[in-house]
Amino acid sequence: ASGAAPGPPEPEEPMRLEYFQMIDRVAHFDEAGERLEAHSTVPMESPVFEGHFPDHPLMPGVLLTETMAQASGYLILALTRFTHMPFLAGVEKAKFRSFVGPGAPLVIEARRIHQGSGYAVTKAKIASGGKGICDAELMFRMLPFPEGLSDRMREQARTIGLAPDAPAPEA
Image (tube, rainbow, N blue to C red; front, side, top):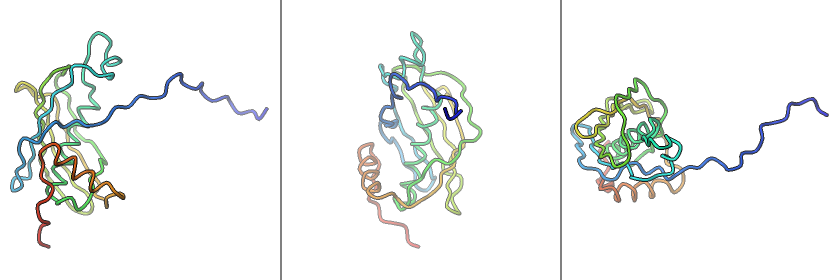
C-alpha cells in the first residue's frame, strides 16, 4: 500500500452539459452607442430544470450570467469586426434581483464601457416583462481566434441576426 487515500468514487453518470446557445436573436446593434440588445426565451423544458429545482424550475444564475456574457461577447465581436475573440475573464458587481422560469421572454442589453490593453469591459443586464432580473460588469480578455473559431463565430452571429461582414475600421 502506498499510503495514499483512495480517490472519490467514479460517478454513475458524467456531468451533463447542454449547448450554450443563450441568444435567440439580436434585436438592435448600435455601433455609435456601443450597445447591443438581444432577445431570448427561456425554453419550456430543459434537463437543467430537472435539478434546478425539481418541481420548481428556475433559470440558474450562472446561466443568466452566461446569457449576459454572450450578448456582451457579440457586442464586442461586432464593434471590433471579429478581429479578436473575447473570452470571459471576470464578473463583478453581479446582482440577481428576481427569478425567471420556463417560457420567460428575456431582453438582454450590453454596453461596452472600456476597451484597451487586451481587455474589454461591458455592463449588461437582463429584464423580463419590463422587470429587472439581473445585471453585472463583465471583463473579457481579447485574444487571437483559435484555429477555425472565427468562421464559426461569424456564422453563429449571422444565425442570430448580427451581420459580421462589415469592413474593418480604419487604423
